Structures are given as C-alpha cells and as structure tokens.
Image (cartoon, rainbow, N blue to C red; front, side, top):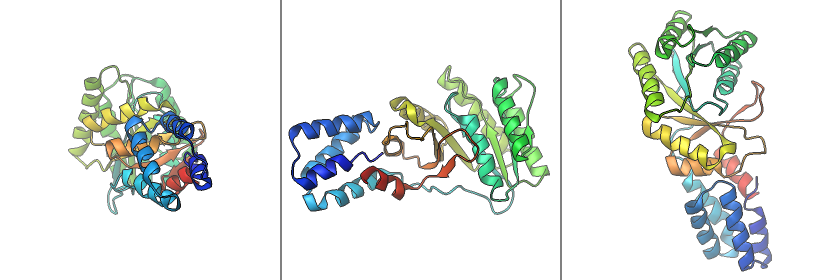
Length: 278
C-alpha cells in the first residue's frame, strides 16, 4: 500500500523526471485519492526540499484526516445503541457480526436487531452469527416495519441489561429519500426510549469513487459518526480512507478484512499514514 515509496526513493536519489511525476499522478488517482487531492499532493511534493519531503508529506496527509473522535461513544451505564448503515453488498451484515465478536471479546453483553426485514438472507446470516457468538438476535416477520423490529430489540437489550445494542439496517438504495426516511424513522423510534450513540457507515473499499459517493450521500442525510471500511485485504486501493475522510470529515473507526468474525481492526491513522509512505 506504500503509495509514496517509489516517488520518495526517486526524489532522494535525485533522478526524478517529468515522466515520473506523470506516473505518480496516475498512481494516486488510481488509488482513489481523487483528482483534487492528488493535485494538492503533487504540488506539495514538487515544492518541498529533498531532505524535508517525507515530513512535509506526512504533515499534509495528517491534515487531511478527520479530526473527529475515533473512539466509540460507549456508555458507562445503560445501553450503548449503534446503528449500522450502508448500501447492500458492502459487507454491512458481516460487519455487524464482526462488531458482535469485537464487543463480546471485551466481555460486553450484546443484543442485535435484524432490521433488514426485506432480506431473508441477511436475517439468516445474522442469526447464524448470533448462535455462534452467543448473542441474542431479535427478528420480526418478513417485510415487517424495521423500526418496530429495532424497538423490540432495544427493549430486549434493556431488559437483559446489555451493554451494547446493534441494529443491522436495510441498504436498499433504490431511492435516496426512501432509505434515508426509513433510517430516520428507526432513529426517532429508538430515541423515544434511549439515545442513539453511534451511526456507523459501512463502505466497500474496493468500489473507489462509488464508495466515496455513498459516504457523501449518507453524510448529507443521516448523522454518521464513523466509518467501517470493508474488504481492506490487499485488493483495495490504499488512498480510499484518506479520500473519504478528507471529503466528508467522517473518521474511519474500523477496517474490515476477510470474512471471519475476527477480521475487524480498529483504524490507526498514524500506522495507516506510515504505510502510505513506507
């Protein structure tokens, strides 16, 4: 993922040519940084002194990352409520399963609501993970009101004195308003009883600019507090986290790789940036 290593080596060696700059520009754009951010980085790299280039790039890239909190807003008392949102196919339901394991590994009690009521496969998937991990999963009838299922799940979580309540929401992006209205209703219904603490947006890192568009769309319509980037297993382009944070201001909180429940890591911005430069 070291996007900048080849350029840095050429600059240090004093052998950089016009064609190298063109190649570097193509590399950054192909790595999902986008045209504007790419041009800013190219301009900085061209103007920096050779012995200061790496520190200058690191400082500039750091400034592009979100300054919002990356830690989850977990409640010391009561139930922490987390909505997991995103379009179908991004790995949303699998990410819910990974969050289940992430929290149960910390000895926290978790309850999940399967509120994607129009996708039987999603409900079956989350129930299977719940059985494996010992996590109660509240489901409703097929095509029932997702807000009602979420509310029943919250009541179960409060009755069980759970620490964490996670809602797996629908992701049918047939119309922007339809999905966003549904998510808004779920939130309003839940907040009659208990505040929603986190709204985590799942984005497939392999979809590039389309993933960035999704992030912008959700950010405009719902109060997204953090991102889960999925499929960051080597096939994804390295610049996606930087691009999304720069354009939306939403912090990446988790990175998902692989399909097992253990394949979820807390996003470490310093480590990520060093990986781009290494």
